[in-house]
Amino acid sequence: MQSVQSLPAGEGHNFHTHPELEEIIYVLEGHVEQWVEPEKRLLGPGEVAHLPRGIVHATFNPTAHDAVILAILSSAAAKGPFLVDVSGEEPWKSLRG
Figure 1 (cartoon, rainbow, N blue to C red):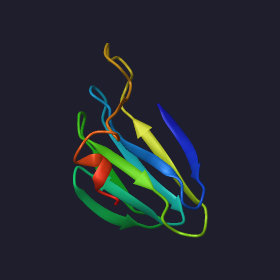
Figure 2: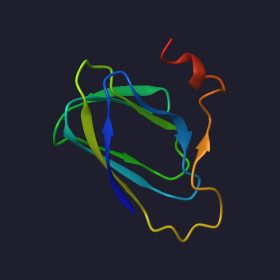
Figure 3: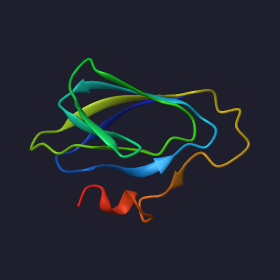
């Protein structure tokens, strides 16, 4: 499964995990703050994040301009949930303070 997603300035995808799917996030335009567990990196056009299944991650646009990403998830042969939101749990809810 793949999708191109626009992340408006100040918006993003809060902390979550895909219990049975790997994900690749490729930045097409702008910059995003990519969290993988408690570590973050600022990614720009052409940069990629690989997220193994079950890893807590989040993607935010901390800039004043829109960003565009391509999210590619492994085959959806999984039997469990597609996504589990953990943004309300510690330590994830306190990371962006």
